[in-house]
Amino acid sequence: MLSNLELTNKKILDLMCGNQQLLSLMKIKESCGFEYLGIDLISCNYSYSSKNCKNSVRFIRHNLKLPFLHNPKSDIITCSYGLKIAIHSFEKNFLQTIINQANQNCTISFVEFCLPENRMLKSLLKLYLELLIFICSLLQSNIKPSIKKLKSILVDKSKFDKIIKQLELAGFECTVQEKVFGLLCLIRCERKEN
Image (cartoon, rainbow, N blue to C red; front, side):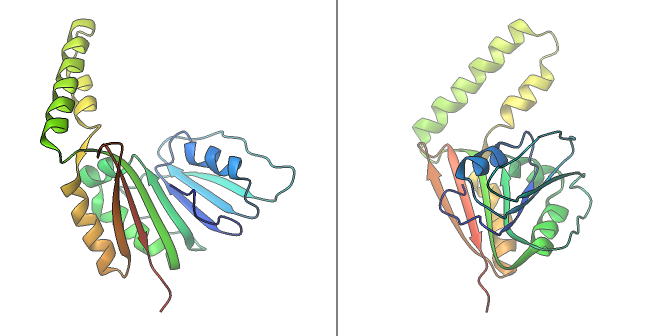
């Protein structure tokens, strides 16, 4: 997701950061001088240190159903596998947070699992999920939470259109790339200084 972005001296906002997978990837890249701010409902005790670089790494426990304002604004905003939750639960505040926190040259990156457009792949994937649900029902007495979780893994790409349209109205140019037979969607939006 950030493989071709220069992270040195950038302010990075990671929405719904979860277990900080993105931060681990950034550590491997060994960029210097970046400021990372991770936001999630869960608290985090991730430790990060670099012998060669002075990087700022902070976490804030925050419910993104509520507005979020933080200074300074961000050069890079990311959200990995959380967009599907935002679409269904708190889309308005999520979008407002992104728009408010983006500086003039901001890049936004989303990564999400999605249903492929190919009918055969979509049918095979749905059949696979139904099989997983059936197996879960044999192993677990209260199957409803498992069914909900399995069905929420994949999102129809058309659900992203509203968010993309709102970001474009806010001055971003967005592109969507499909990877792994259309199962993975990479959404990247950039706002260039006028």
